[in-house]
Length: 309
Image 1 (cartoon, rainbow, N blue to C red):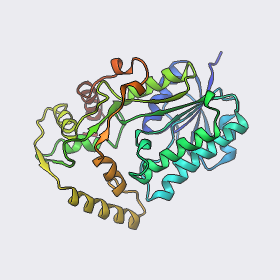
Image 2: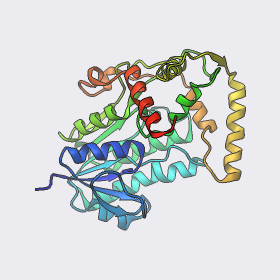
Image 3: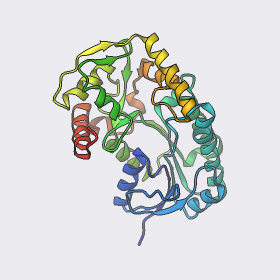
């Protein structure tokens, strides 16, 4: 007999693929919203569509016991694109939940960036998505989770950190005072699944065994160590970085391709406090989550086997 049904968005993304795999192993029946011709790497029922397609959302939500909203843009050409998916897209999904699956339990996977909406268009859009979910969904059925920076097998964004750690001189921005919480994607997926099953409500923030976070230098050193290297640094002045961000953003608009380093992403990177209060974390995560030495070693092994490094 099939288990409870989860309506899942973001099923083909980095976190979504790990979450979907884990939840199918735990006996859930998954219905995944996907683009045409794109299929998740786990057993599920697929619904072709996007967050701007209400008919597809209705098909996704039919008979859902749980709604797990993971989909979101992390790179875009501007604030309008971020808002269309992370803000308005979340609001549209939540309105259809109210109409189609009013008794379902809703989990919104947001971002730690949402606590600083003034930093960037991305952060503002994630905060807007949280506001819409809280406005539309009864708090007795809503769980909001804020992961920090995630890394692990299959991640292309933090791959750049490991590539940079291979350089003879690693470019080091920031002041050295920054505190950046991170978490291995497997630990994130397990924490989310553990909160979902008992229908937890409220809000939780995730982090690894050091919720106070790491400096950029520590992250680069551990990324280098995991590859058998010692990191030597070259300090990068903040004005030079800001200029690079403006150039990358302008090039992105010309090419109609979201830049890897926008001014918003730069503001997020230079923000000094991405630490996490342990009181906001789920029970046992602080004890169970792996630190970056183990996590980075496992990640490098996967990258090397996949031919990414």
